Image 1 (cartoon, helix red, strand yellow):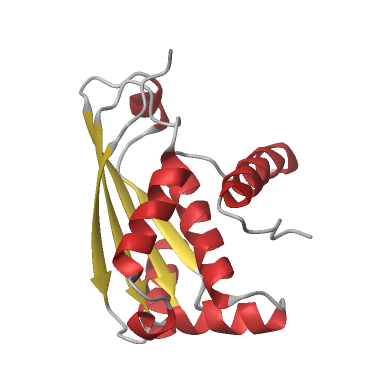
Image 2 (cartoon, one colour):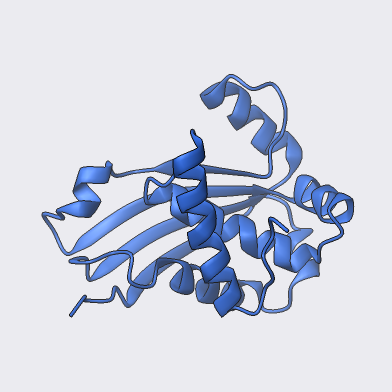
Length: 165
């Protein structure tokens, strides 16, 4: 029987206060989404920590340029604090997973362009960011398919339709 990590500490920073206008009780909502995204994905770990920064485009643009060499904003960035081996074979029951940064204007713009509810797109980006912290990626077709399958599965459990359709 797989042990489920039930103690997830989530530190939320509002770099852009517009985030508090869009989703009521956003802190509790984020905690719920992260818990569902990580469910059954941290065997052997009793407690984990994640930092979430709800930012604006300028903030994420600077990070994207500095750390990825891309001179533009993006919807979500993830910075894992572990390596994939640490997650597969944890040496301690506690793990600092890393940071997720999400950009307000990009989420809003993409939601409109893709005709999605902003809350659903935000939720997708939280799940996407969590999976990156677990070292899932979309660098090639095989990895992208695996990651997208997990995203679709997690979002479906939350009542959100497939974001790739």
